[in-house]
Length: 554
Image (tube, rainbow, N blue to C red; front, top):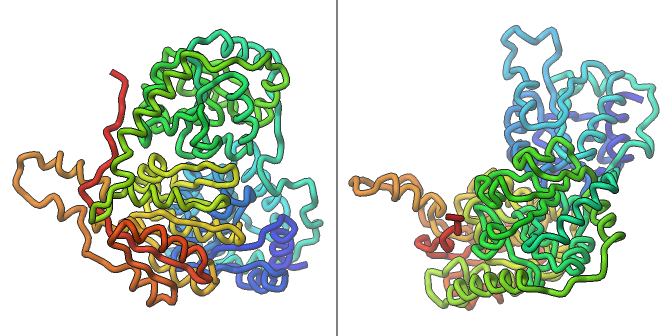
């Protein structure tokens, strides 16, 4: 068969149901994809395509495909940054002009390979159709094996047409090529498991810190069983949020820089910290002060290079998070009763709840973000997927909204402002039967506002809640501090025009709801979740509201 049909049949065999693209790329393949029933979601930006694929991959736990022609490759590479930071298996396909055109000032042509190197696990070129079977296999292997991540292949031809036209005689990918993650579940060395368990049982103040690797592994039930058996308090990174119901008596919330004070205090006082599927970066550890580097640490990760990266004396257990927890559970002694340590961290949680309680029920207008988050949390369906942007959107959603059901999911931007709205569209494509709620600030929403047209065109019926304060809210304190007593206009850098996003949504053919009173939030959300169209709920909030002070160790 020709390369176009081979590529399309391969994607179908691997369970790909959607591709996200900006034309013109792989035109003949798109024809074959339609024949096979694969949806071709044309977006308005290459980064939007990458974000949609990212949201799809995180939700479905399968690789997702984003594509762009030669001139769009740079934008697509930039869009992969979030997938790379979040360990999300996005397969990026781009076209490039043929060798005869290279190094000759060809129109719109620059070298692609170096742009994709920092944001992919695997970066290949396909010069001939005969290479297609081997590179495609490796793309899927690399994307989901070990720590998942994005991969890229650059196909010969402005839109990959030279590869599409070539002949391929190699068999299609079979069952041996992994199509979901984790494809393999390696166990840890049993002796190390016993050693780690012995450390936990002899610790006075142990705590578990769970990252996105445990979510990727599907270790929810094992985490709950382990912490209940060992009376082990559990904190999470933003990516680990929801691994255990946040109303569970052993849950202490989010730790690090986008965090709750109770979690930071608890991890600071621990004499043993068990990191499960966490990269131990600066955000979850508050610049490696939570815990201090000299604290005893156990680190569980599927990637051996991560063990001890930031805590050099850590006892490392290499393997799949769920499998290793099952190893722990198989050798546990009798359950321990809750003790003084658990009572102390529960006290910290209660202090935190009292600190934020009044603002969560405030009737003030403009609306406080805490009240908005509280109303969303109360009315979040049991099977909802909540998608939050970075910055204050993540801080508010992470600290003020609760994931209380095992079937709820929380996805957040790994750093790219504007990610959440297109990622929510990708998540809805992956789980059309589930309610998908995007929580975004107006500054973030403006990045990819044009994808409202994509949502309407394809019937991707998400609910987008815009925290509209006409500011880059997280930047306000920083600009004020930078100016100090210097006269000037700090707001000029962070303030926007007052914009009615509900009217804009209506002009795109979606449903728009504008809210200025907190009592209107719950009815609006209930109505939006029943709608058979994309909905934008535009909530007017107070830009002077900021999260509670960050708790830092002295």
